[in-house]
Image (cartoon, rainbow, N blue to C red):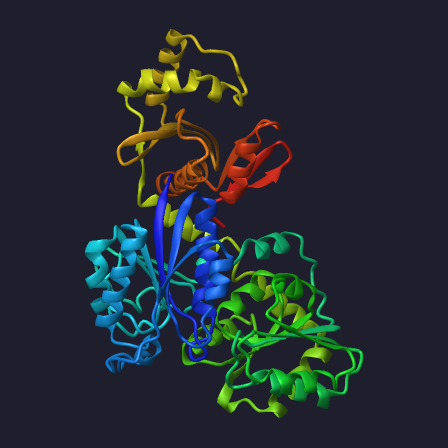
Length: 508
């Protein structure tokens, strides 16, 4: 299932690296599912061009602009030019990539004006946002931040009525290593022996220095401290000097093993934003400082759930306040243990897969099998490539198949669904319901192997069960041990191994 996706996102000293980093996570997941991805990014100081190119995705560069930006939007200066010029330049470089099925926009300085200009050149538009401060012309909107009860209505009036919204950390764009380490993570006791300090790639306000000074004043020489800064951090010389004043402190610059550092830590001190969902996925209790206005609502919502220790906005946070919070954290074992448990409940590490599924589902449709599908299903099921991994590998007699198929169509506890892409059949799903449990079986139509369709078909089927069989709590798949492609597909679709079977909870 080949999909073309273009991503418009920037990084700079002013806006930081978070927008590009989360889009890289999404791009990598899309590539694994067979998509072709291109980044469209402007040449700002502090850009991440080298990182994008190292990831293997196509990079289409927009020039550093000298045009005066718009003033209509709060973050207009981040674009470096007017929306009109940016849209024209984006349209021009898109010709090098071709018409994408999806255009993903992750930029606070872009709104419906820009999106409407690009609309005729792309299949669909997805927006990643968390400000809800401007209108969008999009088909899908992702806001991965934790919100209060108004979270799902804060975009009312800002989106087309047909737009789908994905709201909350359930859809947080986390790299796969976070989910892997979550599954293997130790249960934290609340005792603090190792502290991780990270305030994003740039940290223009130098919150890291406040924390190092606070740790020095705490005089807890037994604490092991890991400090991470990005390559664009202009305060590195000062931070190196401060880190050398702590007896067991290591300063890292632009690491590639952040998930491992988080998993090994007992406590973190850091900003809100995307890193908050990474720490949550691993149940890492954190002292949080909001370093941007858009981080504040999510931080406050996390604090109300008891999932972080929140100190407030960075301009109001002093070294003394950080020191006081650290003193509480290293002495209040029960509090830190509770924060770790509450944090684990917020993000489960499967958000990227969920977002990818929505992007892919735009092309795949499921429909109930009809009597006219009897013979095609017979041919697909009897194909050698299908029988190779079936529990019954023998060829099936057509009369036997026709009798079985007729009975299935009349049975309310059994469903056969056909997956189609652009009207062409690509796979078959069968569900057998037993009270709160349903067993799934799936196979692809010959000629559609190796395109990433299997995972998408499974995910779409689970959504169908959730929407049509409300009493079903668990979907189970029974897979032969040698069927490694199916094991991989079901694992990627969020199923976990249970003895010889794989199962997925679709409702908590």
